[in-house]
Structures are given as C-alpha cells and as structure tokens.
Image 1 (tube, rainbow, N blue to C red):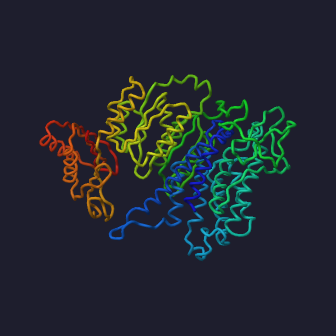
Image 2 (image 1 turned 180 degrees about the vertical axis):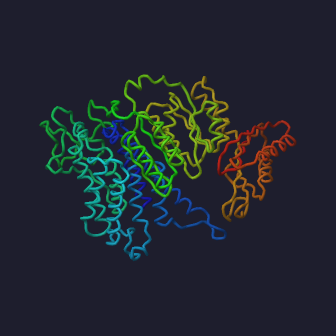
Image 3 (image 1 turned 120 degrees about the vertical axis):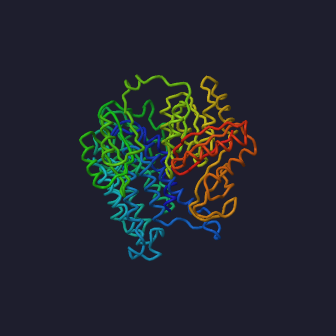
Amino acid sequence: MVRTWCGLALEALGKARESIDAINVYPVADGDTGTNLYFTVESAAQAVEAVFAAHAEPAAVPAGPGTAVPALPDALRAMTHGALIGARGNSGTILSQMLRGLAEVLAVPREATGETAGEVAAEPGGRAGGERLRRALRQAGEAAYRAVAHPVEGTMLTVAAAAAEAAERAGGGAAEVVRAAYEGARAALEETPGQLEVLGRAGVVDAGGYGLVTVLGALMEAVTGESPRPKGRRGRSGRAPGPPAGQPPAAAPAGSDIPYAGAGEDGGPAPAETTLPETPRGGAGAGAEPAVCDGAGPAFEVMYLLEAGDEAVETLRERLDPLGDSLVVVGGDGLWNVHVHVDDAGAAVEAGIEAGRPYRIRVTHFGSDAHRAQQPPRAQRAVVMVVPGDGLAELCRESGATVVTVRPGEPPAAGELVEALRRAHAREVVLLPNDTALRHTAAAAAEQARVEGIRVAVIPTRSPVQGIAALAVHGPDRRFDEDVVAMTSAAGATRHAELVVAEHRSWTMAGVCQAGDVLGLIDGDVAVIGQDLAVTAEAVLERMLAAGGEMVTLVLGAEAPDALADHLEDRVRRGHLAVDTVVHRGGQPSVPLIIGVE
C-alpha cells in the first residue's frame, strides 16, 4: 500500500504540478511549489522502489531468487528517508516531515499495539487500522507544526490540521478515516483565501495546501480504490471564496477537483457546487500568467542536508531564525533537512557548518525581473555529467562540464538533474547520466528542461569512463546533432569494468562468490571472482584488451592504493605496446577501481 500510495501521489502531482505552480503566491511568488512537491514525492517513491528491488534480488545460496517483499516498517523508512533527502522548497520540506510523523505511528510493530493480524492498517476495513490511521494523521499534522519556526494559518499546515481533525471525528475503519481526512482537507483548502491576506488578494487557494490535498487524494485511492472526483464544495459562507473587489478572478487549473476563486456569469463568485472550467496548459486563465517574484523579502532560499545531533540542531534553529524567514528544519536520527529564506546565504551555510556536516547545499536567488535581465546571455552549448566521486567531479569541471556528484545509496532525483541543466545556462545541453539506473531519471529531467525551452540530448552512458570518453570528443563549435553523434560514438566504443567487494555469498555469472571476494564486472556482468584486488583487476584488464583497444583509463576509488595503478600501467606497458594508459584519482567511495578501454 505504501508503494501504491507513492506511485499514485507522484502521478497526481505530475498532472497538477503546473496548476499548483501557477497559483504559488506564498511565502514567495516564485511559481515552483508544485514542482517542489513533485520532486519530493519522486525521491520518496524512488527510495521505496529501491527497497522493493533489494528484496527481489537473488537471495543467499542455495535459495535462488528472493520472493519476499519488504516489511511495512522498511517501506515506511525508505519513503521518509527518500522524502527527507529529496525535499525541495518550503512545501516539500514540510511534506517530508509529515510523512515522517505518519511513519512514526504506522511503523510501530503490531505486537506493540495489541492488534491482531486481521486488524492492521493493511486491511482497509479494520477498525484497528482506522484507529492507527487517525493517530498517524494527527502525528503528521503535529510534526509539521513543530518543524516550522513560525507557523502561519491559511497554509498547508492548516490543511494538515483539518485533515487530522476530520479523521478524529470519523468512525469505522481505515477507509472511512482516509475519506474523512481527504474531505476535511478539501474543505479547509477552500477557506485559505480568507485566512491569509496574500491569497485573498490573488483570489487563489494556498498552493502548498492544494498539493497536500492531492497527496491525501492519492492516499484515499490507495486505501479504498476510489479515485478523487471533481466536485465543487461550499465554504463556511456557503459560496466558493472569490477575489476582492477589483481583482481579476483566478481560474481553476486544468483537470482540477479543487475549487478556485472564479467568476460566475454575473461577475460574482461561481456557484459552489459547479465544477469550474478547465484552462489552457500552464494553469493560468485567459490573459493571466503565473505569479512571479517581485523582489520583496529575503533574496535567497538556502537548503542543505545536515548530519548533526539534536542539541546542535536546536542551536542551529536559534541562529537561523533571526537571519530570515520561512525557517523549516525537519528530520531526526542524526540527519536533517534545513530550509530558510535569507539575505545572507553565507551566514546560513556557516551556521550549518558549526552545527555539523552540511552537504547537498542549494542556494537559489529568488530574483526580480531586473535581476534576471542582468544575467549574462546563455551559452550555445554545455555538457552536464553525473559522477560518483569528488576527483572525477573536479576533472570534469576542468573540462568545462556542469557536474552532479552523487553519494552511495543516494541517486540524484530528476529535480537535481533539472537544476544542473538550468545551471549550465545554455541553449543546448548534452546530458551524460553515466549509470544505467539513471536512464529514466535523466529522461524525465530532459523532458522538464525541454518544456523550459532548453534543447537536451541524453546520451545513455552506463559508466563514468564512457562519460569521460564522450566529453573528450565534445566539440561546441560543431552542429548540435553532429556533436551528439560524435559523443555517442565515443561512449559506445568504450568498454567499461568495475572492481567491487562482495557483501554476501551469492550466485553470479562467473560462479558462486563469498562475502569479501573481489568481483570484476565487465559491461555490468560479473566476469572474474578473486581474492586480491590487484590480481583480479589484472585479469579483468587482460580480458578487456583481448578484444583490442587503444587506450586504457583507470579511475581509482577513495581507498584504492596508488600502487594498484602503477602495477596495472606496468602490465599494459609490457604486454600491449601500442596501448596508452591514463590514470585519474576519482575518489568514488564504494568502487575501488573503474576501468575503461577505448
């Protein structure tokens, strides 16, 4: 059910993203709330899929392929961790904390609650499942309020609280509870223009609240099988909220089931029980445009992941609070996601350094139109690469590429790749994912960038050495198509191998391996099993060169000794006189050696 919920929520946010972006006026009118929520849920869904994939891998010998699925706590932990590390913006950060609060209740072992097997939340009709969902929704709302330094009503916090209150009043099992929570959230969303002045002036509901209602609608569908249906609802006044006098009406987003402040035939508010008309792509009404930042308020949004203890985080909150606004700190168990709007971005980052170890630091300039007008013109072409180590990242930057550095177990979400495509600041971009697992992620990022007017070509590189080969022949003066063909050809002509250490006993293409064995993978398949890194690497290299080659590229991992490269260079020099060797200290943490043969 967790897996289904994540998938449905991602699909629903994908459809509603542009509509939510178009009504984003609080806390900053930067038109990205829907996109931020989408990328946050995308990261959560990817983490859940990863834990399912891990359980489906071949089990220990001789059991053969595993058939087990992860336990509920494992799926929930994956979801919350994925949302935490992938949270984007104010709304995404709050949503990640709500998911954590929900999981803290749902992940409690059944034995600890006294429930029987037939009463758990996985059985939608069970009353014990309903009680557990009530507690979980209450915990989610409370966690969201605790995460925000200065909670404001009329936002997604209000919508979350209303969902929890409606769930408390509902009787029956999980199905009845989640229906009530969804309807309560929708009703609360309608009231937000009357609770927050900026929403009333714009004649729209809260964008973050709209996103939360979308996520709750997906939860209802996962539990009950019922899809949320378009239907207008009455506010407390009995009519849908409308904009103040003299303000233009805002239309409902395409396909939305959420009532917006819209105009009826007589110029007043639309009848409350009428489904408002669909609008053109982009979510804005005729002649309207999504809101843009007007330059008021702090200039920068600062976000980073932080490894720190609870006490250090409390001190960090006290330091960041006076620097700006929209302060949200979420997480726990030593890992936190920090979000704040400030004028002094450096001070916000320095505070994180004093508290612990910040990484994945993102600083976004909200920018006014005047600031954007001062930006330099876009370059004609750029290359974006995904690499696994700091050494490789520096090498690729020196060669002119825009780099996304990844850490073990934390693959980049499409949102990070979109940011890199924007950061490249070019009309045409070649994207090199350098990992088979990132194929779909790269395609999604490219599609988003194309919507924004960037011409993107994704070359399906499967290893960093293929990316290095492609970057080496990159010719920005060539026509775009010719450049892509040349880079694709260079990548395709590069065979790749990795040396890794087996974590457990299992079957492989080369036979049975034991925990601690050195595995040599050629083009993704285990080809050699050994006990010594240097000996195994030499065997792998000889197999690769048996098919021919002109250049060998050796990328050493963080723990690999320099003597390994010296040994392999000498072996190539003695056995293959016409082959050149290039060595890079890549710094990748989990792969001692990557080999490329061109």
